[in-house]
Amino acid sequence: MRISGPKALEIARRIFRPRHPPQDLPSHRLRYGHIVDPESGEVVDEVLLVFMRAPKTYTRQDVVEISGHGGYLVLKKILELVLREGAREAAPGEFTKRAFLAGRIDLTQAEAVLEVIEAQSEEALRLAQRQLEGRLSREVQRLKEMLLDLLVPLEAWLDLPEEEIPQPNEAELEEGIKGVLESMEKLLEHYRQEVVYREGIRTAIVGKPNVGKSSLLNRLLGRERAIVTPLPGTTTDLIEETIVLKGIPFRLVDMAGLSSPRDLVEEEGIRRARRQLEEADLLLLMVDRSRPLDEEDEDLFREVRTRGKPTLLVVNKVDLPAAFSPEELKDVRAEGPYFISALTGQGVEALTQAMVDVALRGRIRTSPGELVPLNLRHKRILEAVRDDLKQLLASLDEMPWDLVALELRGVLHRLGEIVGETTPEEVLEEIFSRFCIGK
Image (cartoon, one colour):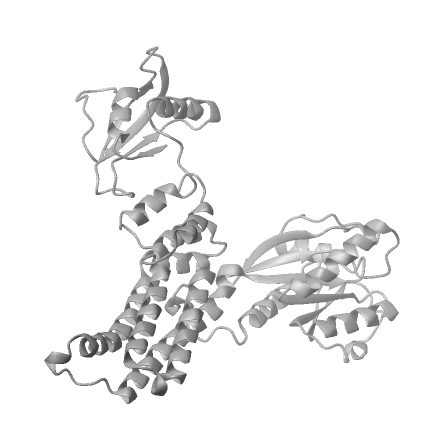
């Protein structure tokens, strides 16, 4: 349990009894003792407690941390004591928000705390750690310095005419803006690459009923997540799970088989399955090699083609006798075919490698270790700044110098939103509301 604020030490002294002298609580020293109700004298729990004096704390305020025995009731009783003695419950993300407001971290680093917590893969965690270390902050500072190098001489010339400062050179200003734009495009390209590691690839397993979609899901997960029976139509709702392959999260969606519905339940399942086809980044199109291809297969092939999504053709049940030849699949517009047995695992490793190859294709041009971490908020701000600079560049030859300076100041102001220097209060509230209480 963590208490932060000017009364943290006062509250700790009222409810904590050290087991051994001294009775005081020196800063950054772990003490063993008991939490005691000061009104009744009742011992609530045996704990370890540490007091940390500001500013050498997470929030740059006085902080007390109490480590008690795990368990809902005992922690609830300690919390009730802390609240009764003058504290209040923290809002979501309030400890990190206090650290940000105190200047200990900037807004990108505050967001990185949440990124660390929510990371789904080791590579996503590395990106979050680089953001926490200030990698993006340094890039933003570099962009600001490039803009200031353009703005400062211009404002000096406008504000100090008596100093005979040389008039700005339009060609040099144009080249400077182009340099800033080039750096921004590189950052945006990093986002387009790293989004694979942060958000993963939404992968829909598509096929007729009973071709083995749920068996493939279970095989990829390494456990029985979906119910598998010989009866068609067993899966009537969506099942979503995540696996990580080569550092990339794949959000697998097993769904109802696409065929003519037999009842209202199947009809709703198929409607949801078709919606997944729209939302997916990658399709695994499955057919059953032990059954002849029919009109429903052809309809499914046509429907997948209309989506225009990256598609891997998966031919399942190779452990059974073949009912059609590979030549019958030559018109299917998908990569493969990949021959597998979801039952035995045969061919699944080659399929997973193909999934990784498709996920990385055309996206990864920079080594993951060199990527600058950005989230969607950072991307949108950079895109807005880029558009403002392009518009300024297009009208530079006809715009008065004082308006050019005004535009550059506006760009700097907007860029400051990334690190929290000029971020609107409602945006801050939205960001920290996504945190859990304890952070």
